[in-house]
Length: 266
Ligand SMILES: [Zn+2]
Image 1 (spheres, rainbow, N blue to C red):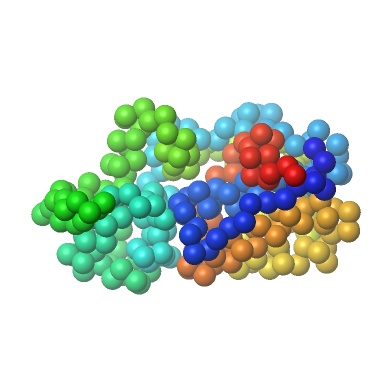
Image 2: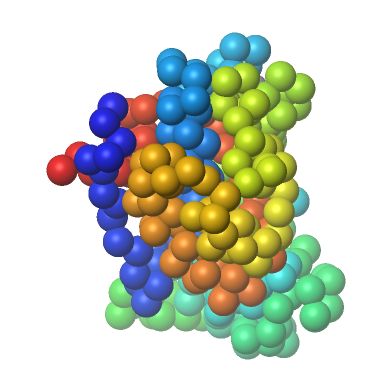
């Protein structure tokens, strides 16, 4: 692939869409960043982990990844529905008003019991809310139950399948350190960091890393990855602004076809 001919889709922080999709995009772009640099340094090094084949999701929901306690409900603490216009969004807003969750305050600053309610539901009384101009009353079943329903229904929706993958338990793979990527990419060091090390950084540190890349790469490499960097920066800035401190990254291998869907050829 001639990386000098790539450009990226713009990101609109006013209409960011699904928060999980935004986080997965960051994960894919970080993989693309290291993959493209790997291609310049070790030619066919960009590929899936030989040990796990790049698939690190395993059966079962990882409940601990479904709530972002650093976020308020307004900013997307219930990750499954964050940034969507699905019925659970107004249902959760109304539930919050009913039981006293401050909609604008990070969950970690409130009663820890609220996180349990958001995960597993509230059965003391139903919630009345309006969605798509329809008045509805039903019980809040919890986001874990909502996700399980998608799994049980054998959803074929691409968006739902991404959600299921995102919240699945992760296999421990020592070969790729949970990135799903090949050794050739994992060995690549950019500005002193491997991809696995970068994935563990807090978002403000990731922003600094991206911001300083020009000073730490030679011009040829920088020109190749500049479109990716220019896209990453506003997304990371947005995630930092809403209060997310770290990314619950699931950077499983998605391959060059996935990369080309992110980065449109001219
Ligand atoms: Zn692996």
